[in-house]
Amino acid sequence: MINVEVVFALPDKATVMRVEVPKGSTAEEAVLKSGIVEKCPEIDMKSLTLGVWNRTCKLDTVLKEGDRVEIYRPLVADPKEARRRRADKAKEEGRANKITGAKVKSDDHD
Image 1: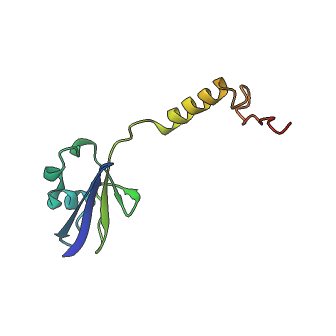
Image 2: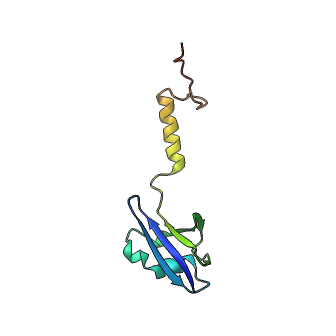
């Protein structure tokens, strides 16, 4: 048997469950055995994204003693789209060059 942690974090709180699983257990098996899904109904088992020590992993990743299995929430916004919107807003406000996107230098030191 090995001991692992299963973690699910929300902006205001984190749930950490310690669980003992048989050697050779997978990340998905540890999540199920921990009981965290019943404690945190926000977890969607159909679109489960997991990581071990801050590195995404497959559900069938075999765990080692002391591993920390992290359950990741889906992104609220697409990072590329958010970056694109910020860049467009900077161009509209004159903080960025409309063609190159480079930062516009201010001439406040006259």
